[in-house]
Length: 387
Ligand code: COS
Picture 1 (cartoon, rainbow, N blue to C red):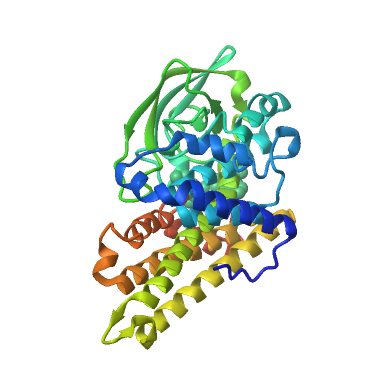
Picture 2: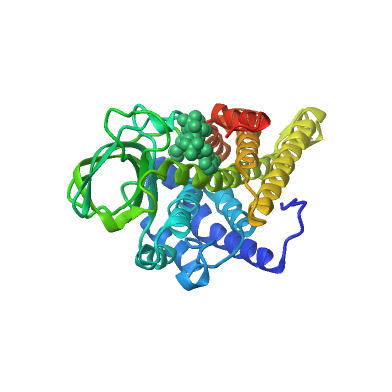
């Protein structure tokens, strides 16, 4: 079911078809088992790279597809509708580390990393949060100290998607004095590779949902990062990270819409087959109204998301629109999957049917890349003209 209100260009239709066929053949048949086993499938990275889906918004000179944000989000929705874990791999990689290097990296850094990232030879990760710095991200404590031609990093990063499989991690660390613990200004962004001595992969989280997407802690123990791997200005890494999260949040919104759409499609099919009181349950108004509300909220979320993406591609600041799109889409995903479980009744509560997984997967979209509360803060600040 595609109820996009915005007209799709020829390129967008092609990308949508490619993503849908790939997801149906290579992802959807495995999604339940990967979830059950918390299995990360490495061949997925290779295949997504071959399709060009790991360099979607990178220019062709870096072997990217060079598509606009809307086209990227269309592909992401298709992947998410099959498996939200596969979608977050793709969203984090495309929206955060590749875009950070493209936007703020030197030519040398772009040459060194972007082609390999587009091909899927290097999977990207983004390390901002810490055990004591989640929503309050600028309170991060990982310290970077310059020593000759290297920066020495010490600290712990939490909730790193792709963290145990990544070949390149964008790490935000404090470059000002260790006692200056607050504020976004004295933070740098570093391009870190797992071969650096002192790079340690910590515990893998045992999560409620997105179980096929590994989330780990990373610890840096006197890790020496070459000065050539500092991204841009050593004091602006937090601003770079925040600007990148404006992109990231659009990706999470597309992921949430994909989850919600899958829940709606399963619910429509089930309500057509399931008979109670001598009728298919789709004939009952109580079910019809649920399905209608689900479809309406999804269409509204998608329309807002693609309007925000178009504004971004026109070069406008989308900080609050990106937060609005993520807020609306993630709350839609949670609400729609809750209705889906209800429509399935007891069958919605067991793993035999997919809505149980969709319900669990939806929850994190209200949490990561900024909780719903943080999105509301960003939106409310914009209403008062604050940054
Ligand atoms: N784009 C560009 N710059 C931004 C920005 C954005 N979207 N958001 C903030 N900034 C800049 C500010 O302009 C400010 O720059 P100056 O120091 O030059 O004035 C700097 O970043 C610090 O911003 P601010 O003072 O607003 O920082 P706060 O500590 O108040 O934090 C919030 C702002 C709460 C919005 C931020 O910490 C946040 O988004 N938290 C959630 C973090 C998150 O999403 N984590 C998920 C990580 S991935 S799992």
